[in-house]
Length: 515
Image (tube, rainbow, N blue to C red):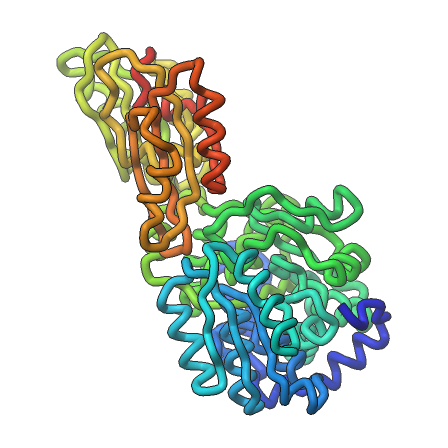
């Protein structure tokens, strides 16, 4: 990569002279009245959903392409992306009347492929290749060499970083009283551009990077002192699902960020609802990271009276994702909790337990008759006072002889088990439970089954998709101990992200045949 040793002054010059407004708009900085009142701080949100491609990516993509020489523009550009960067490159290519080839994984939802074609028109050729971003990226590099294209990277380039940095310039112009600024981190281009601009003009403003706990590549790099590659990343906040932070963004973030905070999927869902409540805009998961962190940070540090900025960096959300968001947002706000409880398998026990709950609102109740003297029940309740109210309820139940288990942070329980309560094998089997990140493309299920072979009986299967390029599967297998290494070999060949859940409490209570 060229020009990686840009000093701070050069970046400032690049940002101030970036011609992004030939394609992008100076988006609004909205006051979040409802959230501000709740958090007792003044919270402002930069509305990058107002861009033509519904995300900030148009800034960096356009600036990078615009800086190319006439000769390189004539040769055309190439990019690999399954999301917002692809749309930004497509829009920029059409605006600048140059040819672009965009490589997208075969798993990319049609809505995103269609958007790229629509934004790029006749100037853009979409090539779908592979089942992951890495495979698509490798193909883009091949095309780059074969045809002499210029690669337009999503974050690891000074001109991309400078284009994203124009957001910081606009935020200071609209509200020079900012004291804190929260910025989402995926590959790091946005955070780097914002931080290097702000810290030269207003070093007193605290800049805090925000990562999904499932793709915290910056945190990992800071701990190691250099960029590292995460073995896997979560798919919910796909806009920041990056395994390795860019080298140049890391250099800048390491020097200029004041702190880094991670947020969970539930906290992201709560932030999507916060943004909707104040703006009536539906943010994509990655776009809501800054608000999720603002809610978490202000409570953690008991911050009040501060002027805080966040960036709604994208609103390209798949409609079906909203099912998952709705299901999880109140858990993220601690306005709902789920727990398991053991009750006697006797007449009247069910009614007695409900009476013990008192006037609390029940949001979920899963139960099925099973043999034995005890029944395990999965319960959801609405909370008015957050976790303190839950702990008080569990203490009350324990005092009255009910054994309870908080499941509010148990991902397996929330994603799969709550939809499966009541099914246990009637005969003893040597069952092992695994979760798979399952690619969404034609024939994927068949490939999965063929790859595993016919040595093992499938004892459990539950599939969940929330509008991403990958679905989530919970599967059980009856595996003889002497064939475990053979099974592991088949799984490794599949190349899926897989985790075993041998000791998960939710599985033991509701699905396992072993007491």
